Image (tube, rainbow, N blue to C red):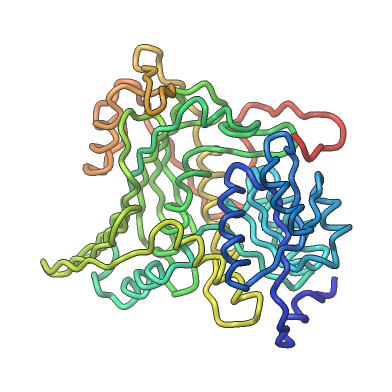
Length: 432
């Protein structure tokens, strides 16, 4: 397909870019707010919007009606009927929709931003990248930290040898999630939604930013992420879901760096994400909250980071710069692909272990919400992170031995340890 949309912007087009948004609730609400700010600043204008749940979005629908913005109940109708009204499609939808929506948008010549993760499986990534090649348009992915100046600053510090040769990377994130969190839609906590793999998990959704950063910082050139060569993993389930809620995984990469992550949604207390990069001469510590830290030869330096809203705004402005042909650093499909491989290989390496009932505890958290937890997981998680040991090695009574696999030639997801999905008949409905 001829990329007519790209050619418009390479001719110094003066009119603001016209945006089509798919979804305004859930994480779509964050996109809606961010795009409103872009409109206020004159960077974009509303073209069209898809809203599949009008009974929950009366206020949002009124907002668009007051501005004469077409509202559609089906994203395909928007892509077809509003083709002359939009240039850029934003897709903050469920994981199982990413591939279909991105490909359909690319085939029609629209610029595309798809929320993280890029897609459920490596086969889906291949389909998106084929559509990119055919259209000549590069997809941007909503790994918002990948766009930030400090993320690239850390990469430059690592490549310059400031902390010496990187020996390993360790990551810990304990973010409790309630039963309401998993009931908020039809795909949360699911492996398959009846039409597509989803593989929802801490590793593939709320905390996959960390995986994306680790792979990027481990790459041996500035704009390249590392490729996974070996994996060791263990995955556990304490919540009434299909997927896992707790995981420890250790990977070896082609850059020679080993990385270990401990992630869970089943703790009583929160421990905000932290990534520790250890080199021969020093360390760099990235934290979700606050500054990042560089320590070399005993001298410690703290470097400020943007706040959460500013991070999202920076991402969108970078995407718009790229669309307009200006210099910009974005998260491409190539920089998002490794995260999908990591997630896929965990599911194809280990079977999810159910935590025995005697080690589970349902507690009431904020707003009287119920959280299904694993007893003493904070203790075992911190020990695993600090001591660089498996859950079994640090004494977790519910833990099993991790399993290992060579994934140097891994190119497609098989679902080896996932239950056979129950496929739904008929054409997929947008409202599902």
